Image (spheres, rainbow, N blue to C red):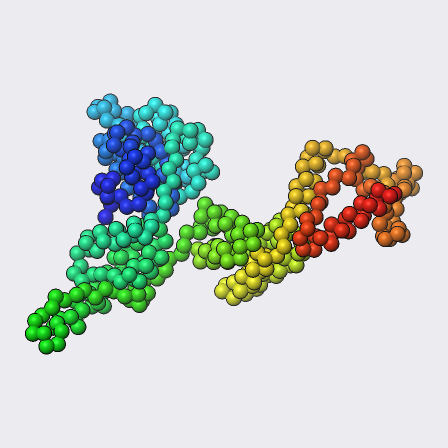
Length: 439
């Protein structure tokens, strides 16, 4: 089923359509080194093979998972020998290039730069995080997209024709379910089509609709028989859904957890529930989601509603105690509350400002009046002198006494906003600052 020409490639029209960058490079016969970044089953290996074909180059494959420096040297030797003997170039495809170490990537650099090798890398991970800057500077990065419904329709027509099974057809609902199971992955979709075809043959579900064999009653003529498509129930019985793309430590996870966090922050409750469902459906450890919920409670809600932190902690505890699916209900309850709670990042910003100030000013000494004085010597040195015990002061507040290092003026890092409980906290803070001014 692998395409033998660029026009047969399904999807990726933004790269291989008329006037698009890879199409122009292929048509000119002058390839540059590039990295294909995208999910599984969208054509990375196919495009790499076709690149070698259109330039009449030798095509060599390295698997970054298993190849070592010795294998890289063998590829370089082969490329040099071919160029010397026939003047032909070499396209080397490095599958899962993100798994190459820095020394392995560096070993390719001079030969990519000299033009001995046209390097094509395939990766499901973000190249900017996994590929060295030196190699990135010598390559173009092209992002491939998951296959669409229209792409899957083309694949299905080709697959049914290639299988050559009479009577194999799929209802619209059945196709929709298979597309959902494939989740943008063409390889997975073709495997599902084959699985369904084998199951249908075994179950005797292929062929003509028996009710059409004799034509309408009394007509006296036999009408053309129609093919009865396989229905949704049969697809559900003969296949099973696969996990969505949400690897627990890779790009898909970080993209989706980011979407989840930003949906909660934006008070988009339905979107927050959607991304949580995607993460759980994709097999992500629910504790990774509850950890993010706890972070959201402090970073984005804070003291606007302190109950958010407790509810997030309770959801994490429920998941630890119950597991899934029971723990999902506590997670959903907490997500709804977090999304609809009043938002404040005042505590988060105050903490960032405090850390930045400490980094800038270093280890300023503790003021004498705040130091503990367990010995007579320390008392004679003034430790603890002029300290005012808050509970002995009016309003339990020692107005005018600073607890910051000497010479540091009150920086007002924490500035409550006008949402939720922070309205009250702002009133309290303004009142305390007024007492300080009076003192």
